[in-house]
Structure formats: structure tokens, C-alpha cells
Image (tube, rainbow, N blue to C red; front, side, top):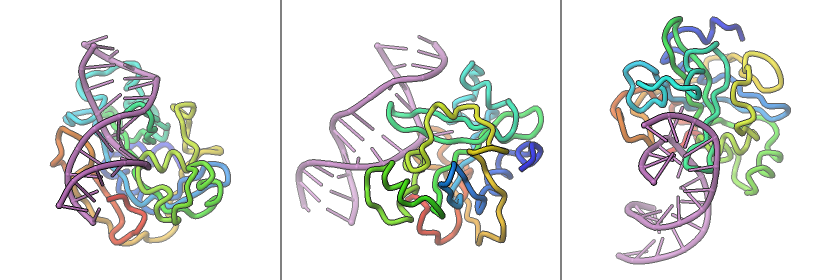
Amino acid sequence: MRVDWFERPTEEVARALLGATLVHGRVSGTIVETEAYLAEDDPSCHACGRRTRRTEIFWGEGGLAYVYLCYGLHWCLNVVAHAPGAGGVVLLRAVMPIAGLELMRKRRRRDDPAVRLASGPARLTQAFGVTGRLNGADMKTGDFRIEPAGRNPGRIVRGPRIGISKAKELPLRFWLAGNGAVSR
DNA sequence: CAATAGATCATCT
DNA sequence: GATGATCTATTGC
């Protein structure tokens, strides 16, 4: 994966990430659900209006990981993706597990069916062992990375985002139609 | 099955 | 000291 793959409009990257593979060591899975967060003109984005130390990464190098702790106990995994000069990230909401199922179950301490192991932002990070340590990691290469989609992943659906209080109506959520691993 | 309360902490004001 | 891009367990019908 090259830098310029991530350095184009955030929405476009959010769509292109569907069908790509998320890898962390021997654990891997297909990305089936994403959301775009734009630094400009998006009230629900952390970086909107306030450009601070934490949100500085929104304007940083494409392909870096932005890991955020929400509600005190859940980590959320994002990838920096934006057109040159703009700022934005893509939230990875759900993954269809491919390999390392037993490790995922062990980390999550539950015996869920495969499609549920990573069907949600916080579940995903639990299953993949993602924590704040990985904030700022380069996902273009290395042990913790994203690999491009191999074949046509299927029909892509677009709709409103989930679990936010502002700008709910913006259709910046993308997922694969009919995929059982997509969160509700 | 649908609704809801509670957990818990890094970051910013 | 307020806030939040969630999940799970527990209620009540």
C-alpha cells in the first residue's frame, strides 16, 4: 500500500477500504464497514474546529493509525486518509475474520461465531489486540497493516453514520450489502 | 425481543 | 470537571 492511496478524498478511501484486509500479526480479516470523518465541515468529527495535539494527526501522513479511547473503556481504530491540504480519517467499524479466530476469541473472552467477533468498532479492536499503543503506527507496512482488496468485494451501500449526536444525516457510512459481519 | 443503565479514562476547557 | 465515533448485562413486556 502506497502513501498516495490514502491521500485522496476521505469518502473515497472509506469506500475503497471495503474488501481490503486488516492484518495484525497472524490475525486478519476483511474490512466490511467504515465511516468517514472529515476535519472540515463535520461537527461530529473530533478535529472539527479544534486543532489540538491529539487531532493533529488528522492532517498528518496518510495511512497512519489513529486510535481513540471512547467511553472510558473502548478503543476505536481509524486510518488517516485525506486529500492533500485537507484533514480526515476513516473509522473501521467491522471486520469479517479470516485468520486467528482462536486468538480473537481468547482476547475477547467469549465464544462468539466468527461474524460477530469483530462486528463493531470496539469489538474489532479487542479481537485484533489494538490499544492506544498503536496510535500513530504506520499501517502501510509492517506487522500491523492494511492490504488492498483482491477482488470485487460486492455491492457497496452508503448511509447515515451510527452512534453520534451531531451531523447524523451525512451519508458517510459505507458497508458491504448483506454481509453478516456488519454491525447493526 | 426491545429498551436502558452503567462502566470508566484520555483529552480538552 | 465535562465529554464521548460503544458494549454488555439486565430488566420488563
